[in-house]
Image (cartoon, rainbow, N blue to C red):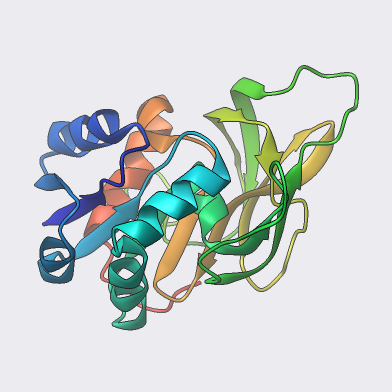
Length: 210
């Protein structure tokens, strides 16, 4: 069973529908007990970093997520969910995140392009369970996915960056470390390529492959 964490913000139903379409049981929940019982955990998110972190802490869902990660369960963050996995964000101030990955989320640089970065863009990927398993491997290839964001992880790390994207600047578009991974883009809105990623996550056992 896949637990989709409900802290009052995010595109929960679209993520759930994508997994249902693929044939997996996915439950939207704000229960730490259900999260503890799940095989896979997803942290989605749309909105402001501070509001999201306040809500997830007020409900105790941050502890449930961190416990799942510590226990080795496969954990996936999506969009704001990825940003919250880092130590800090400079969105409208300076706020603490969950600290699963080092670094600070910053605003996309102004290169004369429209912000937010909204729409389809290509990824450059490296080997990662999201990209290099299944019937149609796409590791090392450029694949097209759907973004909606104004902030990003500008740093690119050999240790945990699984994909990059360029929109005026090159930024980290996917991360993977041990049993925890996340995407800045929305796989549930990214057509067949995104569905392949979600299927791979659902089938992944959390082995430290990143």
